[in-house]
Length: 413
Image (cartoon, rainbow, N blue to C red; front, side, top):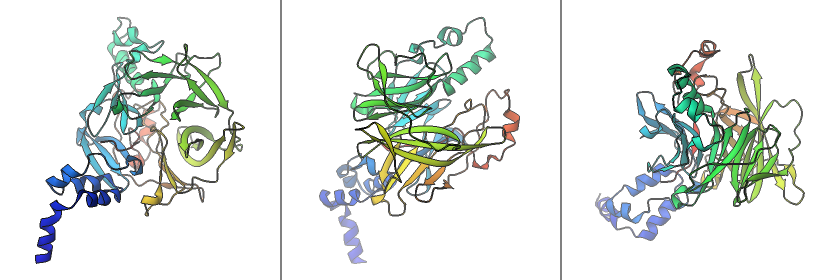
């Protein structure tokens, strides 16, 4: 008892070198915060940011708390718990991307901004109204030619579908960053645009006569890359006027009858990685489930894709976030060579509840898919439910649905 009392009384006097050793062994951000909170001296001695943010498992941003719309749930894979943060900044807004711990949020107005969910820091981006053919006059200036119901519905649809996905090149807190977004054009294609910190407008990439549907963008070795629905990868040249894209690789070889393909870009050990996600459809075509992933590495010397057997000891996380990978060396309870995926296939947004169920873990060793054990969340009922298929969609088993679909978020305090 006396020894314990002596040890307890000396906790606050532990040398900073020993505290640093303790925190470097931690891989759970919650444990890190708990260690800082032991006493005032530890709070002062241990830095606010963990020693290595890249080793932290990402959290899943869940929908608003069912009893309090001001709160959002964050599911922590490291301990299997859900933590609730007060985030009124996310009410009635859509998160269309997550990079470096920041969320890209779109409002009902033409506003789009970056939000750090931990620090509540907010950075405004150029208005969506600076995109070409954006319906500012018709929708946002409340034209007399349309009624209020149409106007409200149009704003919701723009919020949910105009920006497909957006990523940030580097930590926005540095003050020097760029954002690349995939947006819907007037021709119902998906083109890409970008802005840099301090810009007052978005700059669109020069469009071609072809109808291109971009599916993913990423920042790799100082440049933006994009992949379309065919699997063609291009580099985005943003420092010329007008900006343009140059194709750097043809689609990889894919076996026939694999189902619907969706492509993702990633960076692994300085290599450019392309991951193909394959879904099967049943019934009316709205019922879908991921059943396979194929992963390729770009051979820079030949611009050909080399199919990979796996990702080694890496855990990969994909969805609306940047494709994020970490090593399992610090996580003995996790098996490497797995892809954790969330549902990022929007049909028409939050007013059509078919999406929000396709999430799980794909094992590249045995090619199996297992469910990702997440807490159940109620479907958020649409504000404007008078659309085709709504009643039929609600007849489905909703126990495995999470709406809006969860998004992987890295920790950046």
